[in-house]
Image (cartoon, rainbow, N blue to C red; front, side, top):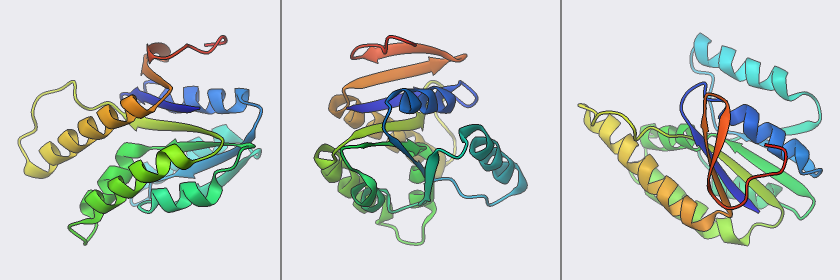
Length: 176
């Protein structure tokens, strides 16, 4: 089972993903791509950690997502990746100009081979204006293309708006 949960900032997407992972009954692994580079981001990370509780194994990896997925995936596990747009940002801001292309390609190759359940969280950023800055336009374009590719490969795609799930593809869970 592969699921992509999209939504804006504070849309409830992470909380929704955590609940779905817990409902799986599988061993829980949280793969965090965020980095606490400033006090506001550190507070966000702390809030997420506190909300999750101790039943989760935490793996922090800002760039090499495919490698971590291969290492952590197993039939008895549910992996939750939060979030893909932070991963994209980390790759775009890396010193290696080819980082994003290489990491994205590796991720897309690994995705269909993973055992167990995978839930991916990402920010839907394509509903606004075209950004004025080149890096911002690249970020919006790349996240939109990634979401389209993942939507094709996922069993379920959900958009979270105001904490409410809107199933775009696949069957909605019974308890959503």
